Length: 370
Ligand code: NAD
Image 1: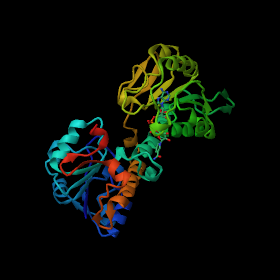
Image 2 (image 1 turned 180 degrees about the vertical axis):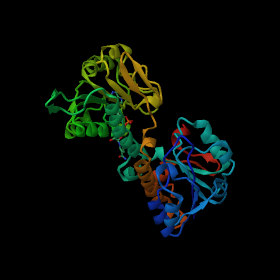
Image 3 (image 1 turned 45 degrees about the vertical axis):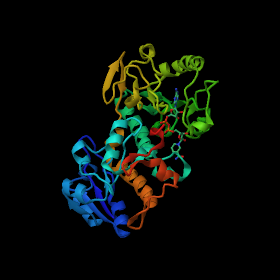
Image 4 (image 1 turned 135 degrees about the vertical axis):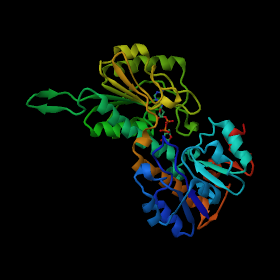
């Protein structure tokens, strides 16, 4: 099979397939084409790709010749004209948000796999780009907070006096939140965390964090481990209890998301006014509306002397490892999709079925057919 790696749009620094993956894929009989300069922003030169077995081509040539095309970000309108039946496309498409684009892509005849739709099941963990990119975001969120905080993170006992450790609160203890807890602990902060899923208490504690308990949360075991909307009564109680932790914290990292819904507002303007001057909020839910009133997506703003960071492109700030992890996720999916150098589309496999969005001229992704 001819595989083609495209250069990402200018704001993106990651690349979809790493030279290590290229080596494996060419080794099993595939031909890999790469658009010139595709790995540059991840510090992976054309020469490194050539040494791994790839052939460097122009974008037009890759789009023309490749049967399977890799680009993390959705293809633009011009590129879409080069798609057709018999071509496969692998990227991150957010099909539930970009419904019209899914119809357009289906009309081209392309078979699209959207990496963010990989089912959250144990067998698919090694393909889960939401988890790997959340790991990067959770880690980087803490480093950004530390860099913007006018204080130390660790406790210091120096000749110039004793410095108390920073207090960090992490709201939402999913993949990003747990990584944030671990990173903040490593930097020496005192960490508290809260989640509406009481079952994460043990995970928070195993990382050295203190779990903030708000009794009465509803946890739906049928929701695939995701959070569900809580009652108004619970939200009121949660808000009152969280406020106590928020106003004594130096840093708050928020990651609270409910699939298919706008992110819940957990830090209100009135709470911001009561926070310590110089405190930092890193809102990892910024792209979904934010968990903090006043968050602006991809901007840093200051409200009531609190710095609010709404950077939702944190994986792009660490392109070397983020590309390596994304590529490994794709490579693991390819183990199911390719038999040596031939496509093996087995729709009986729930991972393939759950990740394939368009095929044979139609949208086939079940959540879009309801
Ligand atoms: P997410 O990004 O959807 O949400 C982040 C966290 O915010 C979640 O822990 C959620 O419970 C929490 N949250 C939602 N509303 C909140 C509120 N109002 N207040 C406080 N917290 C709130 O979550 P995620 O990181 O994608 O993980 C979701 C689940 O999926 C977890 O149970 C995780 O273990 C599971 N998971 C499974 C796999 C797999 O098996 N392949 C992979 C990754 C994650």
